[in-house]
Image (cartoon, rainbow over all chains, first blue to last red):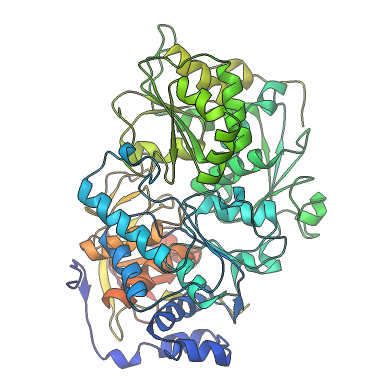
Length: 456
Length: 144
C-alpha cells in the first residue's frame, strides 16, 4: 500500500517527541496485562489492537481500561480498501477474538447473492472483508439488530458495541453499557477484551439532561409506527450527544418502538442512550432518569413539530391530488423483528403488492428462520415481497429501480438513502407503506397529525 | 474522570498542520455524509452539501451518526481526500478512531483537536489556520 496522497501543508520533524503529548495531558493507568499486550507480548495483532484501544482511551480522557464481556463489530461493512487493509493486517498477524463477538450487516446477502447489483470486483472485496472477520472468530450473524438474537447482553454488562442503533438499544433498553464506538475499536476490544472506561460505560454519563414531554398528540399518532421514528429524529437533532428522557407517554412502549426511537435519534444526532420513563430499565421514574438533578433543558413536543420533522425527511415531491406513482418500498431498517413482520403481513391482509412496485424487507437470519416457520415468509414472497438478509438496502446496491420515489417506514433509511442511493424518499407508517405498496402510489393518512385531546 | 484532553489525536510529531477552514453549520456523519473518493459532502440534508472537505481544517461542533464514520474517514485518508485536521468541541470516538487507525496503518497522523465554544465560533470558513502539535489552533490569515 502506497502512502496516502495529501493536499495540506505539513512540516514533519523529529518523530521522537510524539508520545509525550499524551502523557502530559492524561494519566491513563494500565495494568500489567495491558502493558504486556501493548508491548507485543501477546503477539503483533494484540499489540496493534491494544494500541488502538489505548489511543482511543487517551482521546476520550479515560483513566483506565475495563474488561468487556461481548462485542458487536460494525467494521465488516465494506467502505473501501483502507478498512480492508486494517482487517487483513489484523487477521494476518493472527488476531482472534477473546469474547463472544457478533457481526453487523455486510455489503452482501450471502443467502440471496443474486440481489447484489453492485460492481462484481467490489463484491469480491466485500466478501474478503467478511471472511477476515469470520476468520478472527466472530459469529457470522450479519445483523444490525444483535439485540434480536437469542443471546443478548444482560443489565449492567460492560460490552463494546458498534453500530449506532445497536449502541442506543444496548444502553437504553438492555441496560448494558457501551460507549458510542466506531469501526476498528470494535474488533480491537474483541481481540484484547478491553475498552476505555469512559463515556456511557460510567454511571455519571448515563443520566438524562434533556427532558422531552409530548403535548396534544392525537390518539392515532400515539399508536402509529411513525411516532418513534419522527420523535427520535427530532430528539437527535436537539440533543446532539446529550442523554434525553421522554416522559408522559400514555402507555409504556415495547421494544420495537424503542428500537425505532434509538435508530432515528442516533442517525439524526449522536445519541448513544435515552430513557423513557416507565419503559427503560434505568428510568423507573423521571427523577431516577435525571439522577436526582433538574433537567438542563425541557422540550415540549407538539404535533406540528413532529409533522415538520416528517416533512423535512421527505425528499420526494408529492402531488397528492393525482396520486404519486411509487417505485420502491423498503422496510427493515434496523432489521425487522418477528413482530414487525407480523404487522406488515397483517397490514397487507392477503393482498398482492402492485406489479410496478418493488417491496424489500431487510432482516437477520435468525428472524428469517422464525418468519419461515410461521409461514409468513411464503405469504410475503407470494405477495411479491423480496426478503433481504445479511445486509440492508441502503448500504449496498440492491434496489432494482432508484429513479422513482421510494417509501419506507424507517426514519434512518429516509435520512440516509437520498445521499447513499440517490433516491427520493417518502416516510410513512408501516400500514401506510402496505397500502401504498398495494396501490402502487403514495397513500398517506394526514389525519394523524391533527391536534388531539390527549396531552400526554 | 480525568480532565478531557484538548488533543484527541496527535498530528505529525513536532509539526503543525495548516489549512483553510471549512466550518460546518451542523455536525456531519462521515458515513452517508462524505464521499471518500472525492471528499465531497453528500448528505442531502446538510447545509454544506456539495462542498469538499479535502485538505481543509474541518470545524464542526461534534460528531454525528453512524459508527461507520471511522471507516469512511480512513478511506478518505487513503484516497487523499481527508481533511488536514478536524476541530470539534465535543470529543468523539468515531472521528478519533478514523484518525488513530490512519496513523497506525498508514503512518498518516490526522490531528483531531478540541476547543471551547468561543474558540470554535472564531474559526470561519476561508480562514487560514495552523493546528499546532499541542492542539492549539492559530489563525494565520482571517477572511475579511
